[in-house]
Image 1: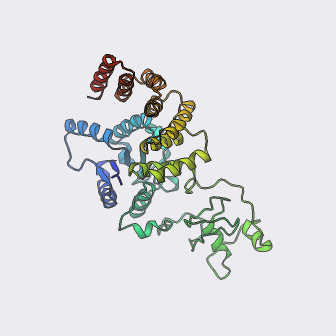
Image 2: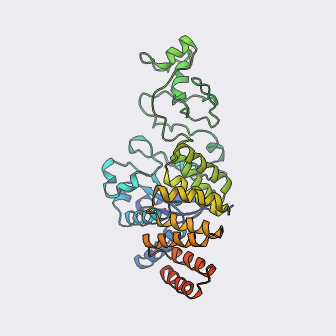
Image 3: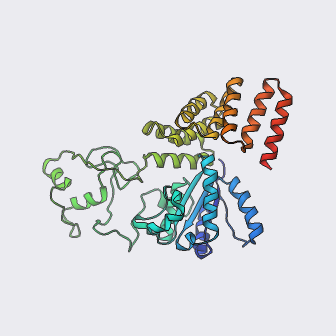
Length: 374
């Protein structure tokens, strides 16, 4: 098992929250870096550059203070630049304070990432935010193990309006009969909300709200037949493409490659034209030395996004290990055209040239790769 390496970005105003989150991540076995030593600007810039490049997971604590700080937006921008080159990285925003829609204007690209925040830009209570962060990163700690095994409760005092109090959620959907092994609050098959409907079903409850006209539960109680629910499922259900990709990334970072592969394969089945799913699946195949399967994934990835230099480079790696050197060379050359400052592409080309007996040119490529990585 590999240790997850995390860069934690935060504003000094959120230091207490960041300290608590860092402790929980470390308790779960992660290697976390953040500016605990209050380094000076010169040293901090060099250290941030080094740590960002070496840590594939970027967690940012967001609040009004974070959006208005000098360092957090910079760190987010640098992390995103690396992410665009290496889609197998993880960016996870965690809300520590209220976030208004206008707060995103300076970093609109960050708004699209899956994040730990309640509806309406509200933060979860600190303990719940930490639990959800661990869950999304597929990390567990002794302190949170029992709580992570079951769906997260609604925090006291933060219950949304017009929502019934949560009750025991069954492992089978009352409506469609499909399994709900993780006891999620929303059925991933038909979209029905378990806690509200089950609470309404309890005839002895005085707290249940009156069901609206033509409520599907009313029809269910009359006929006993499943009711079609025509509405989108929650974006947080366990089998959504985004969730599968993020879960796969978190598992891959910890070197749980077999489980990661399963997540990415499921993501490609749900959304066959998702570049991130194919890119990360190819990365896992390469890590497992399954070069032929990897090549299949990279072929799909470069077809979906021919401008990805890193996908062409990874395709070249698979072809190199399959001893298809001429085609591997063409892949690395495509990657270099797209990103001539990527030292890995030049180094990959040098390895192929050596196999083709072009040693002098290979030496030149190695020097270029070394200079670019300095």
